[in-house]
Length: 297
DNA sequence: AATACGTGGAA
DNA sequence: TTTCCAAGTAT
Image (cartoon, rainbow, N blue to C red; front, side, top):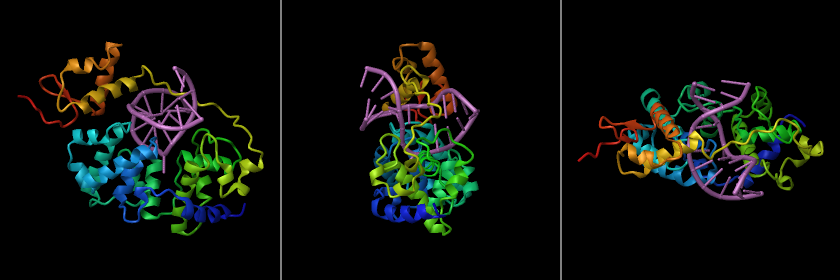
């Protein structure tokens, strides 16, 4: 295909079909975009939407989140999953407040230096909040590129080629490039999906290499299914759920009751939560979310 | 370069 | 019921 045939198709399609997500509103700040990107890591849009609205009302600036009690932050994170994200977001907010004038940085290297912000999130913030021309590579984009450009059914493992492959699809104009990045993600999220792609609705169907190749099946390595039942992740989740649901510090017995199957595993997981900074132990031996005020009577 | 890290909805 | 998977990051 010609140099920017893809973006020529994608931009009108995006203008007509993009979902009306709250963090895409024109008045959303860099902070709003950053919060959305952290929340969306490995987490479906539908679950993020209500929580993002709450957070932006409650903590409209980085300094607001930085000043909050970590216990309140973790409770507000609720059951979104991967609560270390909340910890890192609060840490990032503190750096932004103290070192960047309470304004989310607009360049990739500075963003990358913040806790919890990696290759994807740094570029997503630069592109979506500040209109920068930089390739934004997430699982959706990697799948779209694998199919439309390389003619493969799946993306496989992340590779060094992903960034230049994606950048090659961006038009020269900075604003058009940023919108193309958003459109690539939107296409992967709503049309060029992992299971049951809706190719009849695809704006680049006639340009798609996978289509031209006859939609060959994936012949690469199959990803190992992630286990859940009985894992440390499940136990950590149970323990944290007890603390989120409690009004204040709890005794060791309350946490023991959360996982009776394997006391040694329970102890190991509690320790890892302490190491991660998701839980604290008070001088009297009770456990609490970080910074939880002592309700001792 | 694998692996750990939460959660819940859909197939 | 089981499996898959959803805008990744850190180690």
